[in-house]
Length: 185
Image 1 (tube, rainbow, N blue to C red):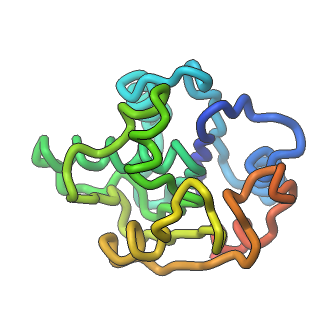
Image 2 (image 1 turned 135 degrees about the vertical axis):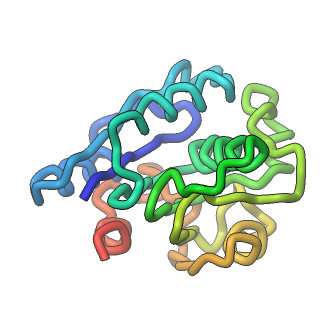
């Protein structure tokens, strides 16, 4: 199996973050893991993030690739998928996609540094064969609810993490066995 793990806004892949832990667990199991630092995480530019993600997809086999996105990376992946669809691409960029704590468009638009990541249309495209959305039940970055905004439009399974917040270190998520379980099933 191949994995691509993509971080969110202001994330410099710190020790103790569940994504770093996930990458180590997957590598220890023999999986091929890519966990890149996306450009300028404090002042991200959507086109730069999409270019970096496309670069990471080079040499992967979409049929065995699982992508795990957190927070702003979810918006970047969905924007990539929308661009692929607009270009007439019907092939999936990955077999599986985990959108962990996706951020709602109104929240994105309300933060000037990441407003450019909001989708311009209501259409949400997954660019994966199978999609799973994981969210905290009180995520301040998706107050409308990830199940309604993401799971339903994508026809995706939804998993709620009680008292999960935005599923960050500050919310108590260093090791995150649930995401490991979901990524490897």
